[in-house]
Length: 279
Image (tube, rainbow, N blue to C red; front, side, top):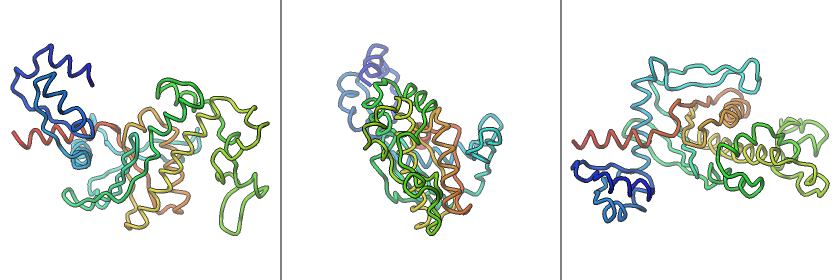
């Protein structure tokens, strides 16, 4: 951000006499720097207002003639998995799960009627931060690349590790995670895991937690369509397919996980629309 403000100063952005619309925490954190270093005034817009407005607008105009919204069919089967378009023509109500550094979950009943239901501090920033600590990686892309080659079952304790199979009475399959990182209590198992395994387990842990919270919110709000957005999902097919499968499996087909092509840009689009509205 300091580099951007410096560029704005050197290129005399302020001479254009335009309003710079900004959203998110940075609109407040860097406002004084914009004013003193760049001679620029910010028009600060609410982060969640911009998010909802951006999602609804981009979905309404489509994406290069295609649907902005899509879902995964057969998400856990590498050969049969298909990314299919979904028509959000009548989107309400929907649960909007915005996964950035942390997570905010909104129930959207109409373009003007929505509320923040809850959130969690365990989001994309948690995944990346833990991967940096556990693997020594230095970029988000590197962390995801590691995760794509890892095996989380070497790190996590599964239901079958405890029961020897399924826990049938309560419908828990043997492959379900009983304890994230539970195998790391064993010195022998700690010494046998790779950095890739640790990255994969971290990704699965964060994604499962988000999916679980989203499912509970959907049930509480009586909403069956859950739209996941945010930069955590950028180049992150592993998490998207896991969320798609988890919501479908644990809800017995009642909940559908939906995704959008421009996962991390809706706040910026909403800010732009805010500028156009004020013009």
